[in-house]
Image (cartoon, rainbow, N blue to C red):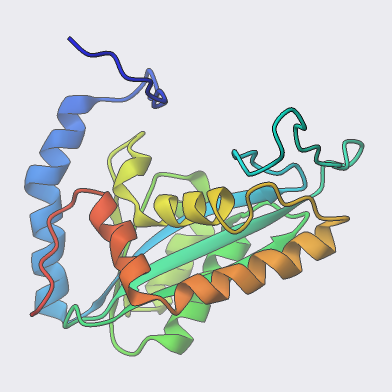
Length: 222
């Protein structure tokens, strides 16, 4: 037996593998049929945060001279982000819509504002798939949905972030263009995150790779 070096994956102890399997086998086909029936955009939504401390990755340097990154350690400011990866009704085009907030967590007000943002950019109905974050189930959100008939909500199984393609988008940003990046302040971090995210959002093949990484069966037209 061969034992190659491997990076462990984190799994929550609360995770229910059987419930996740049932969701993939039964709920995901139902959601796809709903999207087809409504001729709606399918939009996966997720939130994350970008810190002043960089994600460290191996890089090139002369032998014996380890690179040193000078980072700010006294400040804990951050850029919070909410993103929606959309698939058009005919499955021909993908989009990645993002909003950023400096030094502010994503709460129900920001979630509702982001949904309004999506409605301005996407015509017709929208089927949203996201996790069970409290801001995704708030009373204010339910009240807003009663007045907005274009948005239909669906929920991922608990503790299964790997089923949300945004997770792979965040990982790509943090582990590639933002790896080893040490901004001077949160304003510089915000500008850099916005720039690289806009570049990623224009690359259809990269966005499709985020969807394929979930393992969810999605058929693309030839």
